[in-house]
Image 1 (tube, rainbow, N blue to C red):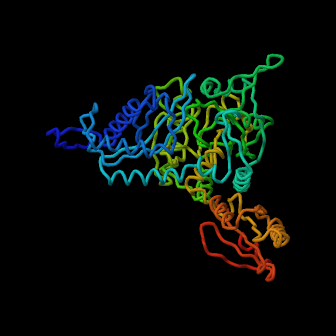
Image 2 (cartoon, helix red, strand yellow; image 1 turned 90 degrees about the vertical axis):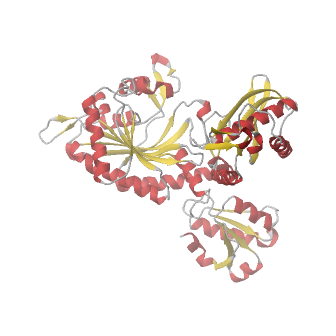
Amino acid sequence: MEKIFIKSLDKEINIDPWREANLVAAEVLANFIIETKLGEKIINSEVTNDGFFVDFVVLKNVSEKSLPLIQGKIKKQLSKNVEVSSELPTSMIKGFELRGVSGLKLENKQANRIFGFATLSLEQFDKKKLELKEREERDHRKIGKELELFMLDDLAGKGMPIWLENGVLLKRQIKQYIWNQEKKYGSEQIETPILGSADLYKTSGHYAHYRSNMFPEMTVEENETFILRPMSCPHHIIVYKSKPRSYKELPVRYAENVKQYRYEHSGALLGLERVRAMELTDSHIFLREDQLKEEIEKAFNLIQETLNKFDIEIDYIELALHDIENKEKYHGDHDIWVKSEKILKDFLDTQNIKYKAMQGEAAFYGPKIDVQIKTALGHQITVSTIQLDFLLPERFQLTYKDANQNQIQPIMMHRGLIGTYERFISVLLEQTKGNLPMWLAPQQAIVVPINNELHTEYALKVLNLLDEADVRAKIDLSDERLSNKVRTYQKAKVKTIIMVGDEEIKNQSVSYRYYGSEDTHTISLDKLKDIYM
């Protein structure tokens, strides 16, 4: 911990500069709220990695507009060395800013949260302010709203995303690429129900290990009990088991865009990063032991190629192992754990892939290789995964006939290519700041007639050409000024703004501007589609 020498106290004390500065700032703000009768009482006050927040029961509602005035008054108090519980004099705080205010729900009462940050040096203040600004620009919730990709509404259900047209178009592009990858990999595409019987999950072991993450059971006639599907592996197992299998047809690979539902505590929900309703690019491979090494390599290469296509920056590779002391979380066959963990470790070591071994992070049925990504908010999340499973084939009594007609148990591999579309798109938006490449952008072009009365007919002709070339394009026939339209579509990150007027009609051409550029280019109609190739 950093040491700071405080002259006014004539002694040296050990403090965490960030925590102490924000504790003091939060205390001064809390006192100010009570003294000025903004709040009836302080509910909570905490220091975080981003600064501090103070929650209070409202007497006078605080808005964003009133924050600068409050901030100015707090700064004056800090400079006067007001008395606080800390040993740190308030005048040592050189940087202070209130960043926002939000409403909180309490029973029968209204509350506000004011949040901000404080530092002991202007250098640290400038650095933190830049970091927070960058994070805000990368926040997928903000970008998703600007690009009109998705929405969340508590009335529809917390953690239940509603995909808007642009979001559907984006998902469609990703899905098409993923399916092309799966075909190249040799997968069979299947579809399974969003419900499963409770007995299905009891057989697989998910009921015992993941019951707290499942939605409540639904009992219907004849005492049938169903659960909203939290995972698809048991369904894929049923498809494998539906007919006799021979060693010659292995590996059998199933792939599906799986709609699934998991109960997450409402406090843990975060935009698309953590939801209750999700769609997963899920695949399960049933194979012989002699095929395992090659199949792991193929799966890892496919994940690597796919993430590279989207320019996804990963943080690290994790080897998720079980915890031998945790008897409740993991199945108890020690030999299977030793064998399966060694297989994955040997693969990573042989391929010279750097990884972090994390004890206690395995699935209940087996170890896994996880691709970890750091989000704009500093969270570590898993996107792609390869998981080995010797347990579920045993529980469902899966077999295939070998060359000698003996019944042999296959190995099962769970492989998530990009994880859920929700989480993957949140990462994609944060890492690109919403400036998606042309092939992914939900809106590739907007056609804008300079004068609606004179140029609409020609603009519609341009739009028709774009439609024929399978370009995702729209036309703007609103009465807004051209400059306002350009500003709007730049903010929405539309890849090209196509403008048509008298000159374009005369020359059978269009003028266009790329997103982020102020340069205008002209191209003939017969070459228009070349922009989008």
